[in-house]
Length: 186
Ligand code: URA
Image (cartoon, rainbow, N blue to C red; front, side, top):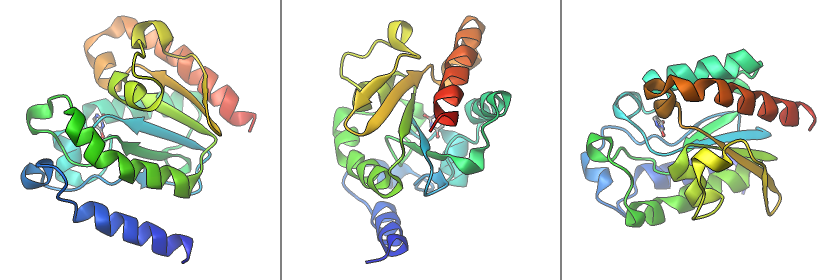
């Protein structure tokens, strides 16, 4: 099976998924976008309203702010891969339920296997708790590197948190600069 076939099958399975109830309320599946050979992958929480409308991750207000951080540190959106823990929007943007994460995480696992990035950056607490460690504390542990199998991982504040709390913006820029430094050294 070619790499492209695997991607196609995975995306088709994801779009047809009915393992949790979110498929009934979503407008679009938000599978993921970007470079399928990316060395750097970002993983957010779940699609919001704009993402659900457009079928693309991080295109709403939080996504626009995230784009500013990427360009501030000299990373282009096209060179990385961007996905979420959940591929369907939870109604009213509530936190994902554990059963929803469990039902959906296999798609992210397969995406990660196909991409095989060196660095995975969690955008926010939900992603960090799921991918780095269950007791992850975003206020204390953002910007800290963890090694998980073959991956270097870290988390930054979720861009939505930065929309609400300007005091976190400077430390996030520092974290993003450190991510860029590690990425440049690959
Ligand atoms: N928040 C997320 O976690 N992911 C998106 O795609 C958009 C907002």
